[in-house]
Length: 95
Image (cartoon, rainbow, N blue to C red; front, side, top):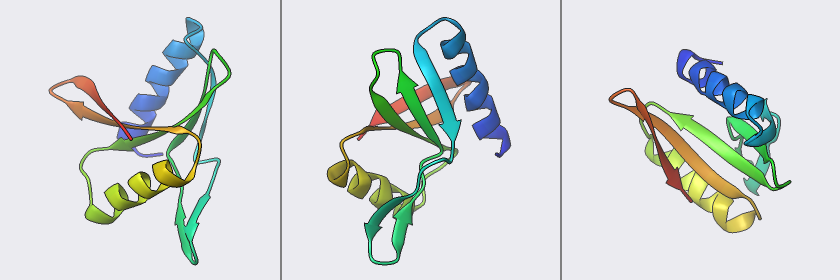
């Protein structure tokens, strides 16, 4: 886990502490997008209502990473959320 991912994990831990999410795991799923093409979300998050979300933490986007998360969002029945730190605050993008 890099520094930004660890910071996001601390945020998730705080949300878990107040009951907004039930649990989370770091890099625990690997999604097949095509032959020899996979996407591993940074965090799998179990919301308090029982729904799963896949969270991706980015300092900046590489083109292939954006294509992979968009493809995963089309193929799998999860909400995909990208989190980026901007001027000290988390900014979210939903796919």
